[in-house]
Image 1 (cartoon, helix red, strand yellow):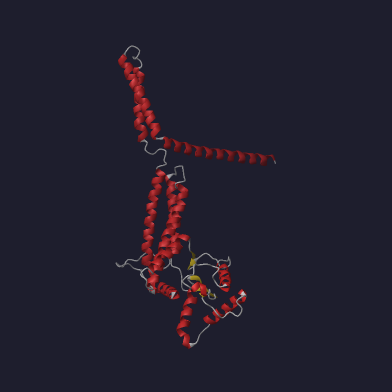
Image 2 (cartoon, helix red, strand yellow):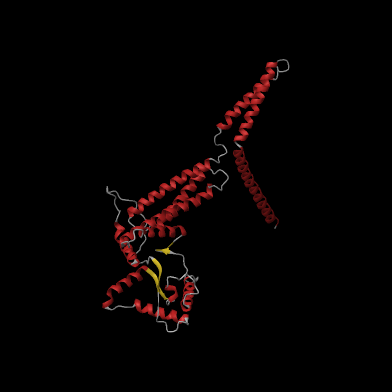
Length: 372
């Protein structure tokens, strides 16, 4: 049945390539890169596990058992009699959707396992079943059989696999088997969502290196604009690479949502970088500083008469208090700013020092060359 979903998905993708060329108003949508699915197999591997197998000639010879199942599976795939036309069609659909199809068989686990009193004990299982199960599990998880999961050649990340599992699981919530077209719609939805999230993660990773939470210094506005342009284009390239299933209109809608999400992230990064600007909110320094400067000047003049006038002495003391209070206010409210200015200055000094060291090295090399 799942192979039918894959077949419908491929055929619908081919039939839907022309969809969405024009919007309802007749305007052409932006051409999006499409993947040629005609000659591609969408899925990697499908393995059938046969239960209660009774036809092994020698159950103690595991390799022989494996060969017998392989021979049986080869015969099953080769059936072409008219009486099995519907089965042959199903097999063709399976082979067209999976690059590799294999099979393995297990014997009956034993009568004790089928009883209601069975408590899950491994020792209660039939020894032959345990031996075959041990071999099968090791074969499934061997390095030779483990490959990165991919759909239409695109490697699926952990986040993408999670979205596929959640989307497919929801199809069975009603307790009925979903139709092939429903599965196709779910696949399109999951793929486009994966493309959106992957593009957003790509943009965030790039911008985090430029002005993310771990960056302590202020980034020049022009440099930040160039970084945004570069990483946003890279992110949309990731989106176009993944979002290749479904109509052009559907993909274009999700693409627009992705661009909107990137624009929101861009605003966040600009605000984060602006908060690190040492010259930001200069009015917080200029106004108190002006008050302190005026207080210092007035106190200087009041000191000329404070020796013989109590009024001048009181005014001088008051101005001294105002000056001290203003400087304490500036210092306490801007401790973090002073720290950032210090760190930014330290970075500049290190760069200057590195440049001086480089010049000294180059001068030393040039001097040695002249001597030779």
